[in-house]
Image 1: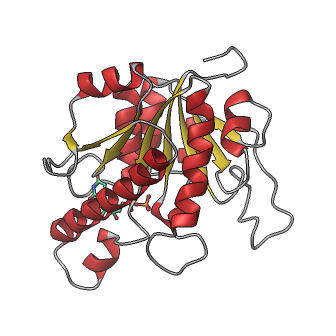
Image 2: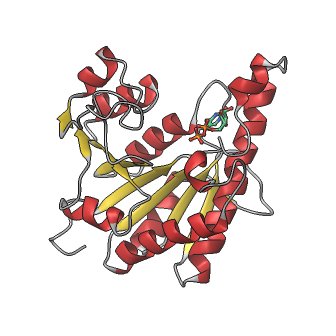
Length: 238
Ligand code: UDP
């Protein structure tokens, strides 16, 4: 990647809720297209991108468990939801000429490659976007943990968390207008203050591997590129 980029290989985590756009549920293809455009822009400039998409727009294990379903079973359904989102994202990227592969932590040979670390690395070297589906492939985890694990396995320079706000704030900026954004935080700050950026297990894994987490708004135009070049507004956790 050209030197204007701070990071050469990144993992971008987008939660399922972001894909809903303004809909109450499911996948808003206009929103998926917008994210695909942002990814395409930086891939064409040589940045290597891994993607992890959540599933909360379709199914969240914990809430169905609360309603009486066995937790592990509900979590497997949640993992299937992430596969659907991965296929939607693959479709949007391929439509605009970006070469992609989906690798699923739960083998589903007819629609995706199984997760094979060395094969995923090869795809990245060839400039393909690798979309990691089904989280870590085990219940009682989340796609945040999946994102952290794959970021470490792929040797990413950063874990980018694309959200609907442009960083981590002292309070919810949508409810409290006096909230201010942190420019930087330590992993320990996030864990000790329980800032709910990502799961504690994901934060701990990034702390142990030293990979910075960058929280930014994926909803704003050009924000992915601007985050990668350091021009935008975001919070870095390191
Ligand atoms: N899930 C899981 N193991 C994983 C990843 C996901 O059990 O490794 C399940 C879990 O039920 C979760 C759901 O899949 O609620 C959707 O993922 P997540 O909540 O992380 O999606 P997001 O909040 O990012 O949209």
